[in-house]
Each structure stands twice: as C-alpha cells, then as structure tokens.
Amino acid sequence: MWLHSAIFLLGSAYTLQYNEHVRVDILYRTFSKKKQDWINTIGILVFVFPVCIYFISASWGFVYASWSVNEISRDAGGLIYPAIPLLKSMLILMPLTLFFQSLSILIKINLHSRI
Image 1 (cartoon, rainbow, N blue to C red):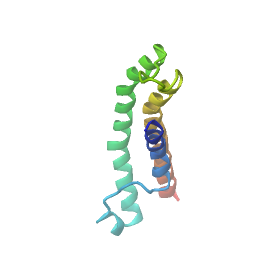
Image 2 (image 1 turned 60 degrees about the horizontal axis):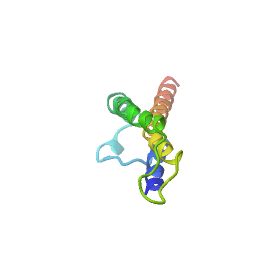
Image 3 (image 1 turned 120 degrees about the horizontal axis):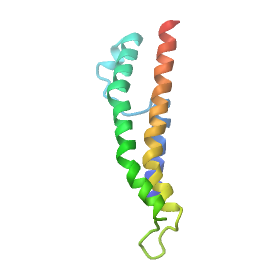
C-alpha cells in the first residue's frame, strides 16, 4: 500500500511532463495552439502553483515530526525506522516535482511564443 501511494505521488510530475494527465478537453482540443498555451499558463499560475505551495506548507510539520521522532510502524513486523519518514517525505517531494515540472512547461510555452 505504501509503495502504491509512492508510485502515484512521484508519478504525477512524470505524467504532467508527457501531457498524459486527466483533462476535460471538450473545447480544449478544438482551440488553437496559442489559446491552449494561454489556458495552460493560467491553469498553472492559478491552480498548480498555489496547490503545490499549500501542500508543501501543510505537510511540512507532519514530515518534520516523523523525522524528528524516528518514527517506525506501530504494526508488528511493520516498516523499520527510515522507511516511514521517507514515505512521508513524498508528501513534500510530490508538490516540489510538480512545481518544477509546471515551471518547465511555462518556460517552454514562453519560448515557443517568442519564436
């Protein structure tokens, strides 16, 4: 279960990189490339960046507490020390990777619009 969640958390930026994320594109696919770029830019600035910043700020204390108390699994035969804090650290890694991938998309959109 933990590794399953890790795959989804760390795969979000990869999915965004290849434009394979879920999108309701009833109108989007009929738009010109320039209009699609504007929609992507607005979506990143209004939705992705604020959500990433919120996720990082909301999970920072949770992850810090896990590392500071050397958290282990409470289940018999559960995960040993570094596993639980590493898994919880993915709550910060996911929005960071998503933020930087979105920044990369914004840079590519800006470069394409200048050419």
